[in-house]
Image (cartoon, rainbow, N blue to C red; front, top):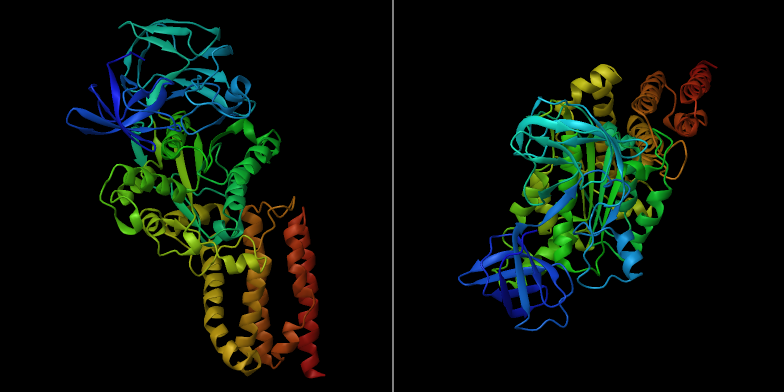
Length: 583
């Protein structure tokens, strides 16, 4: 950083500091006070600049120095990001702990990437090759599962004058362009500026999550956006952890934004111990965690989301499919509300800043499946958890998020209290990607995939209407075919929608297994309706024991074999019921 001017503190209000005597640009990094607390310029008012400080401002007083460096807040991008646990402004927590112990002191300055580690670099270009921003110039084996592609920084171009191979630190020069630009394993990028790409692609490939309710009824596209709103205890964090572990994204960026310390501790303790089901290696080999708990300074919480999305875009530029978990955007919005009130801005709905909608849109718009400048295809999928106070989905953060995202997975406290997990309400949730993903599912899951899922959804919706009547007059007052419909809906809920995230087999359901389960339930529905028409009583069909064995398919490693066995048992019992009419 090039040291700029020095001014002094004029006024302090919590994390907001007003300085005078310096000239700065919007979003420039500044260091405030004798301890040089990091901050960022958020307003310029005549000869004064307003700074949001990323650390606790207790003890600061007017007259203390403020230094500007004339460049925005940047993240370091290069080998060493994966397996790391950062705070909101990309300071590695493990390094801070070594230096300062369990409690981070103010003004701590550490490099995001280790400077003493040497990486084995293998060039993929040669002398005389013309390269431009985004091109791959070589590779480094970052972890056992991810090969890190070293990119020419955006905005840089020229002919390779010199390129080396061997072992280098992130600061060593690995090549030189004919214009004198020095290439390194690392480059920096401003967090608030989206990284460029060649072309955006339509959302035609699903992010397979391994969760039946999501893949079957509410699919998410790679490069898409999803929101998981839900009250306390409804399973937001477990759902996001399950998505991080089992979804077919190659790189996971998990941002714990303003979450409670104990929840974030759980994530930090559990993630390093999780095994990647695809490779058998630790999940951290392809994961980066950004931890910014609710007791950390609010300004750093506001920055943590941007730090996460910039890292995600960087791996997208290398041709990887990245999933970003933001847990939760409500805490991020609360940080913006606090800063906005300190800045004495005009409040919007419920005290949130008037720019809340545009800030949320700005974040979610950075998702997408794209063609990079190096002709690879990569994607960033954003899954944002929302924590509405009291589970009220009509509050501003949830409502503004719903206007932007195309997938809505609504968590329901009532389902959670009934021990129905994942507690996603199938009547409130929706996906706007179903149509664009239909062709993919047709090719890989069969022509009838969409039809099966639509039939299942129709039965669940019909159940909701019938339940209103049942509560008034009881289920016995319903016509027999409607009594049977309620039983089929119950089977869909208990055998298909419910899933055990802690069971070794049931935690992940591939597309084939998901389809097989709904197929056998709907097949039973059709056969049962035929028997009903022949005169068999609904109560006798509902009392069948063999149909309850469908749940065993979920827990069977060889689920195809189990499905055949269960189907044969059901067929036998159906046949016996049919014969009982004539006897």
